[in-house]
Image (cartoon, rainbow, N blue to C red; front, top):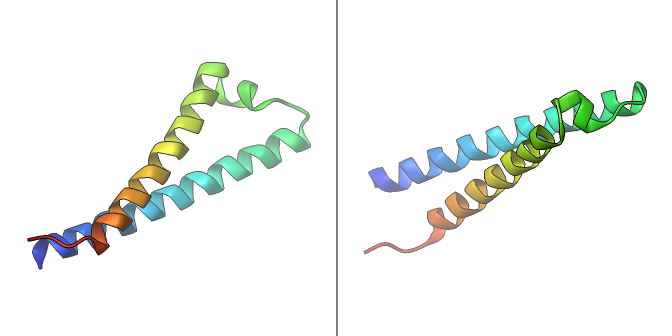
Length: 75
């Protein structure tokens, strides 16, 4: 039962982190559009823009894997 609770907590925290990161990324897009900039300028370069995308992908994968982990049977 304790492992199930930990899995649920990891899932909740990963989804919350993903939602916060998506909202920040969305707000950056709005800022970039309003001030006629590029996301690379706002993030500090192409490398950091790619790291921002990588963070979103990794958080998404963490949420999916932890969500799958909740519903799998353990022996």
